[in-house]
Image 1 (tube, helix red, strand yellow):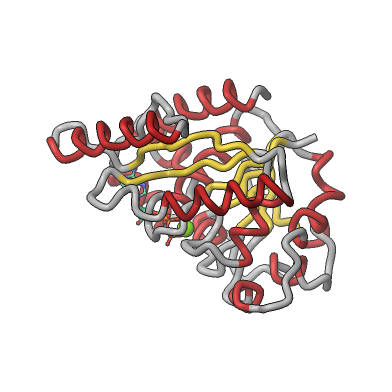
Image 2 (image 1 turned 180 degrees about the vertical axis):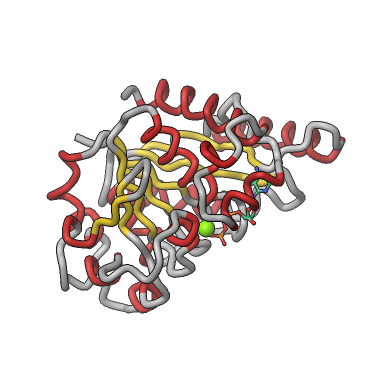
Length: 251
Ligand SMILES: Nc1ncnc2c1ncn2[C@@H]1O[C@H](COP(=O)(O)OP(=O)(O)OP(=O)(O)O)[C@@H](O)[C@H]1O
Ligand SMILES: [Mg+2]
């Protein structure tokens, strides 16, 4: 049975898609069976995975026009359920069941060790469905001003989902990304996040992901970071982070 991890925060550009793809690639590289689900109509992990206009995508799965297994795309390190712009229809629809994704993927859960879900920068139907389907939520936070913006609302949403729809949902922790240890600002923000974590009891991962141009370059040439720049700072950090994550999720 797969461990299902949503990468979520409704704030934009905090490294969700980069993190989701990095985790999926590294676990796949380590011979784990991995499914990466793109739940964002921007389709960033779909693009970065090298998958163009797939015949069947998440919107077809969620609207019941095909099964999850029929929509799988095989990538080098993982299987991908791709997204396209039509997924935005599901985000704004008013009659979406919160268990739609959970039910849609239940037939394939047994085929994977890990399912990683990339979510959009909004707390709408798509993120909600992702959290309801998950065992863990991972929260990437940029080492920038206003970093903690949105965490309160996400925390409230997670708490309400835990109460009713998914009691097993756990916060895996906050992951600091795009870190530059040379700037005082970054060190200050790291301290601020540490204080916040102490107050709220939300765990913070020891590993931080340093910034590096290799991330954007790899995404542009649509190659996993682990292949494009295995010795780059962000890749080294993501590999260390995955060790910590796997330890925490116990798989
Ligand atoms: N460690 C890093 N070093 C340098 N740039 C990074 C790093 N991580 C992410 N980026 C860049 O930051 C930008 C935002 O990253 P990403 O798309 O992963 O965020 P996101 O949270 O998924 O965004 P959205 O909210 O729009 O879905 C991208 O241009 C990406 O290349
Ligand atoms: Mg994204």
